[in-house]
Length: 109
Image (cartoon, rainbow, N blue to C red; front, side):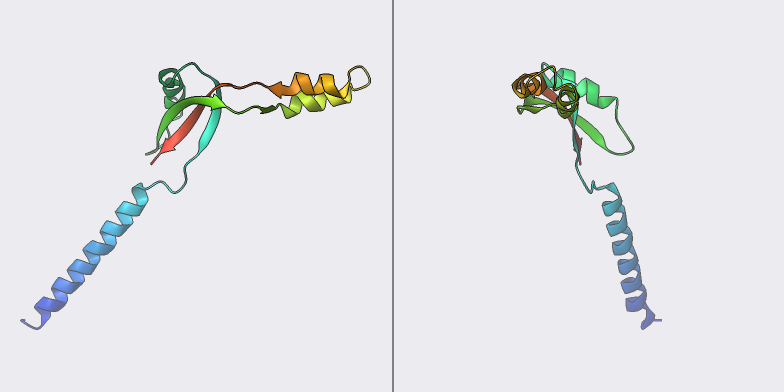
């Protein structure tokens, strides 16, 4: 009986370690996402928008931050179709996105 005690203890310890590792990895977040959800004034407003997207164990937080300047590609494409009526410069002005405050939903792990 004394010979089997260390084997039983070792087996139990390994089993517990495996179970512990599997439960820890199940609760972790493998990748974080940051999705644009439109204009916002402050973090509180943005957080309420992002709370509607809760899924499973993930908690979404909202961050209202400056949005970089850019180009609205769909507006630019539509303008290029009608290029005979508008110049390239006019199309670029229409499609420009000014700096603004954007709401971004972030997965908090």
